[in-house]
Image 1 (cartoon, rainbow, N blue to C red):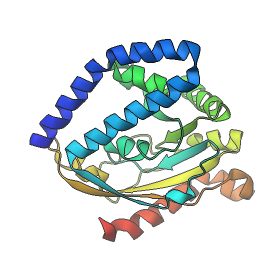
Image 2 (spheres, helix red, strand yellow):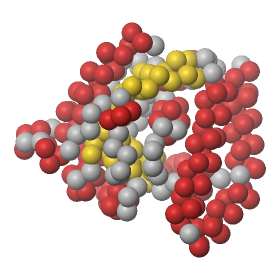
Image 3 (cartoon, rainbow, N blue to C red):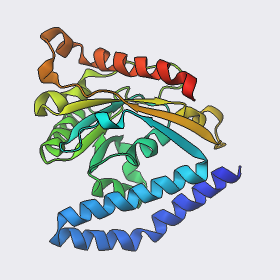
Length: 244
């Protein structure tokens, strides 16, 4: 109970107190967008670290050397928890926008930080709008901003269960030539979703698998890229189960 209260209090206070900071960031962005990008990234990373600390979440990271540091990438991960975003975001080496459902835009202050961090908002009820979101993500990669997508489309409700990875997510890599970095996340659901509304101390394992470039694949693997990447993530996931 105490962890839930602490996390909620911090999130509410941060979103309120950060309103004038957002104004300052907006003004800075008018003169130097690069400084605004770097400072917004640092602020949000700090806030996410505090939330994970208050939640009692510890993370073992494997394979971080597999993430290219000098180029934007497409992160692809399995998805069981809202905390997946926090766990992975504090590790990104460069500005990274996450693909998020459009409903998040209804949350004041949070929506502003997400826009500052170049997140892309997806309307799953509108196919045309969904295609536009993919095009926006492609433009972000071309501008040097990494993108993170959880291609199951929603959170898997059961442990050790994966939903089908949607191939549309991989158009970002196909059209830009960027590396696909598969991310395997173990045990994140135990933080909150497995016993709502309680938050419990949890050990999570995050593994970055070797990057995949579409240009290195044959035609058959390109057609089944979703299943291929899902297989890589599942293999790492079940290998790491004994570590949690």
